[in-house]
Length: 108
Length: 121
Image (cartoon, rainbow over the protein chains, first blue to last red):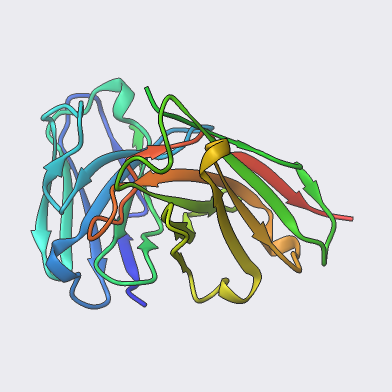
């Protein structure tokens, strides 16, 4: 089973700042099959990125994904008020599908 | 526009079987290449994949839950279902149903709102 470790656990930033979130895998993720989700309190997760770097439909271009192998990054170029949430990575390169523990982006 | 909605009891007794249904509206379970999954999230914690089904009946389960999980699908009712047996307090979670684009892309691009299931006597 691939274990995904997200860091930091919490990121305290101000609107307009850049956010850099990390997701590290315990072994290489096949074909860079890694997705990122955003989750707000009381809501279901929302797909942001798949294939490590492809934005899902309707996702603003301030969200970008990068990385390969075992190290992946989600970058939010300029934080908008609606971006403060918890972010999860998920690998789908091998079974079982696994999620990271999440990074909370909070208002500083 | 396709939507997913979970339904089922919000309270289940320990050792009993949790049963949930996901109803799909605005589309079909069988007329596309999509797969359909269940994911859960204990209160205040992260996400755990439970399993996935294709309309043909093929199923894929998380080995950590496989001995207790059954996922089935009824295309005529536009529903797929989750059964989790011998539940304990550790199974208390929000349960989500979701759509996945199908192989080899097993991520989830559309989710239901989720339903909280509490295991307690």
